Amino acid sequence: MTQPRRPPSGTGLCATPAVELARLIRSRELSATELLTAVLARIDEVNPALNAIVTLAAEQACAAAARLDQRAARGSFAGPLHGLPIAVKDLAETAGIRTTFGSPIFASFVPNFDAPHVALLKQAGAVVIGKTNTPEFGAGSQTFNPVFGPTRNPHDPRLTPGGSSGGAAAAVAARMIPFADGSDLAASVRNPAAFCGLVGLRTTPGLVPADPLDLLGVVGPIARTAPDAALLLAGMCGADPALPLARPDRAGDFLDLRPAALRGLRVAWTFDLGDLPVQPEVRAVLGSCRGVLEEAGCAVTDAAPALSDADEVFQVLRAARMAAMAPLLRAYRDQIKATLAWNIEKGVALGGEQIAAARAARAEIFGRVRSFLADGRYDVLALPTAQVVPFPVEQEWVTEINGEPMATYIDWMRSCSRITVSAHPAVSVPAGLTPPGPDAAALPVGLQLVGRYGADRRLLEIAAAVMELTGRVGSA
Image (cartoon, rainbow, N blue to C red; front, side):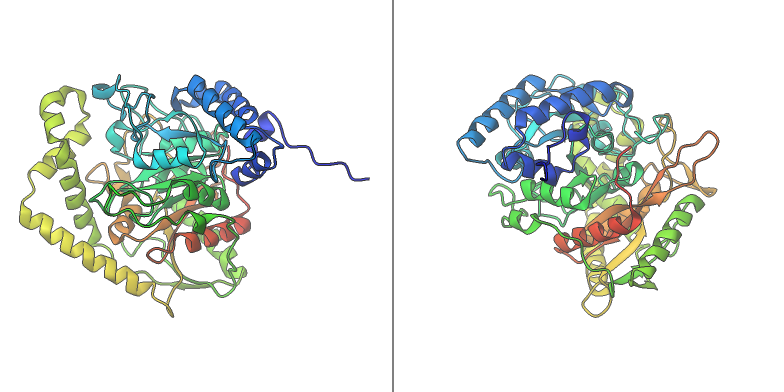
């Protein structure tokens, strides 16, 4: 007689996929309180060495889990994330939980409201347990700040997890939480996902309620698998009457994700977008990944849209966005890091003609990428997520690649920032690991897949299939 399968417990729960945890909770085989207890124990065990979760709200989380268990006992469930724990990036306001933005200026700030996507997460039943670390105001793809210090990579604590959602990625990779929210302007979801061996989706603008007038910055999921990322996305996408760019509720689109069929998938492939420096270690791993895709029946072609002009567009539009922080810079210059101060001042110095030209160029680049991915040509564009492998945690930013100097603290992220300008969704998936050395760990390398505008679910289906091929689950 077959014995009924027992749900995992303790550490096993923390390694269980989010979609399975959701099933166990809905079948009443697992309670939100039991899951939270395991998560808090895991955080206590591994977080001190990584510094990924910087504010823990255990008492509030326990109360929320208890309320959800009471609701489940009545046969009612809050939504697709009922009882699943999450720690929110410390750039997003959380009611009653300290939100510092990684800045000493806001070190004691406790908001009385939730950011739009955090409100949706709670509505969907997620249990907010605290905050994940981020660089100062999210500026830079290296997670450190003067409030909490640096976050370390679970694959090798001597290295950075990337950023700006570095605390989120490190927490997920170390199995402290099943998934996490991130925000992405230059590369801030995709870069840490690549550095930590995870799935990270830069969503189509407006899919998740965020900045009401900005196409550069979006919110997206970070998870160990594509179905887990889709489940989290189902809990935080939706309309918001206060945000004009928030699109109609599409939560149901992301439930029950299944891998796409790869045979016949038309993949445009580029190692460098024509002119970007990419470390040999990254090229080698991605080259092997390409071979696996071809063996699976993908039609892989060397092709890419011309995107070098996106660099100036990104620099101008990012700086224009940063100019909104000019009052803070004037009042607290001694508490703002040099790279951020430079970016704010660059924005203040811009003229209206420069900004208008950049906006017009962005529209042209969007049309160029849209045409490139049109029906009958390519299904996805494949390229490196990060041009480098994870680097030492003491290093603020990448100053050169293959001997080519990087002029600013954001130039080394151009494989992602060029895609940002296009406004198309992009996902980073684990492509493989670099070979370990005598004093070096094997390090994750991410493959970035760019999909058609608005086709976020399709992109995650392709990501799920690619992950089945590469055989990587993104945990340390």
